[in-house]
Amino acid sequence: MIPFADRFPLFRVLAILVIACAATTGAVQAQQDEELPRRRLESGREYLRTKNYAEALKDFEAILQSYPSSSVADDALLEIATYQLDVARDPAAADASVKNLLKTYPAADAAAKALVLQGRVLLELGREPEDVNAAIASFERVARLFPGNEAVPASMFYAGLAARLGGRADEAIERHTQLAIQYPTSPWTARALLGVARSLTAAGQPLRAVEQLQRVRNQFSDTPAAATALEWNTILYRLYIRAPAQPAYVFSGRTLAGPGGKIKDVRAVAVDAENNVLVTTDKAVSVYGATGAQLRTITAPEARGVFFDRLGNVLTIYETGIRGEDRSTLRLAIAGSDGRPRELKVEAGAVTSLGDYLIADEEAKAILRFGSDGKFKGDFAKQINARRLAITDLDEVAALDRDTKTVTIMDRDGKVVGRIAERGGSYQLRNPADVAFDGFGHVYVLDRAAVLVFSHDGSKLLTTFTVPEKTPGALTQAEAFALDSAARLYVFDDRAESVQIYR
Image 1 (cartoon, rainbow, N blue to C red):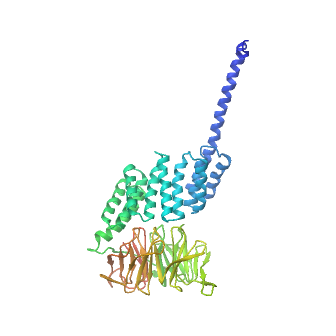
Image 2: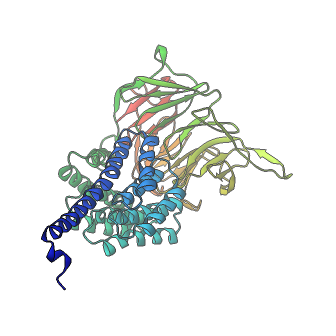
Image 3: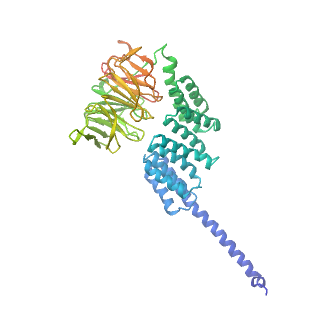
């Protein structure tokens, strides 16, 4: 029998046209189905760039709800997880989003970046050796499962950072150096070289660190890393090249002061992440910008000092607790000897990289650890009447005990790793008033008429800085100080009744 289509050629042509039209329509429809979620993704990213996070999240969540099978659904989920970790600072939520992404879209482009994020989440949740090892394993999987992916340099950088955070300096140097060799022009290499400089300085090789920082400035001159490298090179130059033949610091000729050119009753000085200077008096916290202009005032009656949470928000210390800038109060208490809650007598505070509060309690002569919700988690250190606390990004803590005129240096678990005694072979602490760390972990001690700088473990005095009486910027009755990102000194001297700046 002759096929129907062969007997009717016109019908055959029409059938072919119908099939072709259907295929074309399907392709166009598929294109249209991809176009809207792509536009929604870009919309969300634009909102992220302008820090309109609520609208950004709406766009990303709409993609997951309406277009879960689109080629950008994995990207939307990655953006949500990144926001949860970097902006909301909610590692538990970020962990859930990352696990969802790796389960739902295991072979998608975003999966490589999700592995990097997974490792970072692990470091946010804990810094024990098993946490560090698990994080490094997640970073290492990126190159193994997605060779050539753009996320590989990032994974190598974070693997080196994890080693450093775990106290494995030699491994950190090796991993960051390998990144610089394999990806010499990657922006991640600039950050890795900064890490190498930190580790070399801690290992007692500051001049080699200077070489690495200069390399960042030469190869990545227009990047934020180059600006950081310049600041850090300045610190190393002061401490290891200019000193001791010359004074490590000179008075800048600039001061910070209130109306009338004076500040009275200063309790503490601090510097935030933007290098704004915060001066705490018994009535308020005054915030000064880079030009010395007063930017704003935070009402804080009977404040004892300030520190910052992980988001950079100002936390004011008062006698029985801490207050947020929004006036929210977190009263701190522990069980007393009679079993009833005992309010603390708070002298100083600091925040760890995991968000815990370390609180110096004058009543117990101890440093106590509290969760971000104010719940007591246990003793951090005993038999230290700490009047000042300082903390590094590695959660190393320096506690100044004015009673004994000593500085105790502890690791993240409260184990003593160093101590600056009242008297050493080439120094004597007569009336220590404050303590601080710079970006390399050097320990700075303010001793009323001098600033002494020690190695990261306090074992070696690097330099002593003084300004004689009756000369500009004289240090005679210094009560509080702070360092900015370039370790410039902001020192309140009670006799000068101002914050004097040294560079």
